Image 1 (spheres, rainbow, N blue to C red):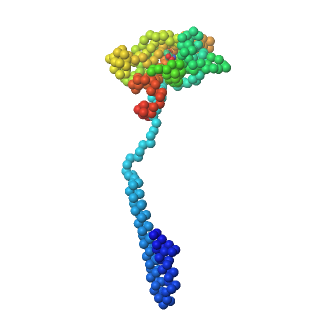
Image 2: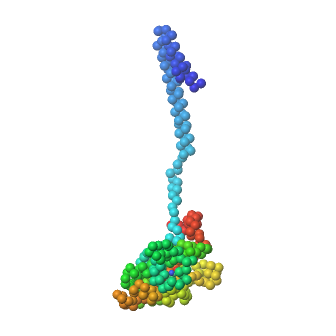
Image 3: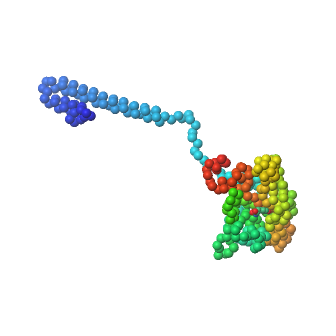
Length: 321
Ligand code: DAH
């Protein structure tokens, strides 16, 4: 049916062909009528086609309608990992007390990680169960078990006091359960000068605790033992949940342990050559170390450490940018 009028063999062609058989007298008239018919047909065709096209366009415009007044859709943005956020917060707080950022490698020597920190060969922390040792031709390499070796590096590099550094970083221990991960993060602080006192340590830590957990926070120092400090202390803050009244989180004590610290042990100064030889002036100093994941768990109420390492976006995106 499609070709009925307009194809080569359609009615219009037949009509034009038939003009041959029309007498010369009638031909102009018949020819003109034929042309008229042709023009009309073609015009009708064009009109119909335009009609279809307009209809198609109209329905597309309707379907693909854009409302330019709508607010733009936000592109999804990532968020900072809670460990990254807390690390940055800790660094920012101690920066205000004049601490400079220091860094050290994750693969350490036994000397920096243990010996220089007054942990002799038979110290339990050197047990194979806790420490990842690394095969090395130079011998005695390991994945650092804490950020304390950066104390040693900083003092050796600076050669003489004052030294006031803060070192955040990853540390490694062979351990894995609800509160332990084989890789976790610590921040180490060290302040060495003439006449640095235990009171200054307490002051710095109280300032930190209040900046991190709120102005009402109290701290408590309990005598404790770390080979590289004397005296040494474990430091508690008033419970972040019950504010000291006693609850499930603080096991009804009202206190939560957040870090260890103390006055730098004379053996440590001896190992880096402070207070002798070229630096005979007596020095004192304080040091402290804290676990970043632990602070993050307390601050954000995260019950299981492993959540911080599973990288489930539903968990991570709660912490915002
Ligand atoms: N290095 C210790 C640890 O990993 C933490 C620590 C305790 C660091 C007392 C210190 C300190 O500087 O004085 O458990």
